[in-house]
Length: 299
Picture (cartoon, rainbow, N blue to C red):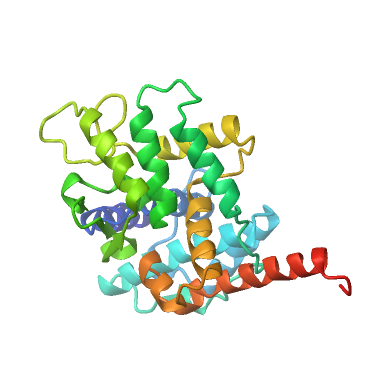
């Protein structure tokens, strides 16, 4: 194993010990493996970490451009390499984080596509009506109610354990990015859905702490939850583009449209920066302009 390969392996192991999300660990692993493959000549060894300079990294980034990767993908891959170099600096493998000197590719500013309140509620009502024959219908209803009712990320939803749910006070203890904890309230519909689901919840092991379990009785994973959402969205709403994050966007936009404070929405979503939450004000303005253009006689 080359020196660079060994350090990448140790870096990923350290991330795993720090309990980063499974999604982040998987993406970093894939991106750094591709970075390693780029640096490895045919039949040869990749260069040592302390020989990597800004020119090498710019050439690597140029290769990503030639592959016609989207700016978002390139930004993610560069973030993985920067994080890896921070690790190398911290462990005195290299003297400086040369990846910090690489300019981040600009990504187009796009507004998230947001379901209307009517569309979101219609889909949830159809899920609750049991129009699909599913092995765990009560679980599916509770899953949708928490996605839309609490604005959770999919990793936050699948990471919930039984001890994180306060049914009497209607609070969830949510672990977001960086394992930061926050409390999120849930409403009466979500509470009723959880009550029904918990009666039917069957874990394969009595020690299983996961709130949401799959048909094998083990913790439901991110991929499984995404598949559930896509199935219902495709069959019931006829829209395979709806994904778990669509409900997070809808949650924030609908709260803002009904007068909720932006700071409160920031806390509920677990955003570290208010600027991240402010994108939903742009979504609301776009909706207002559409309504104006459609209805006003002077538009």
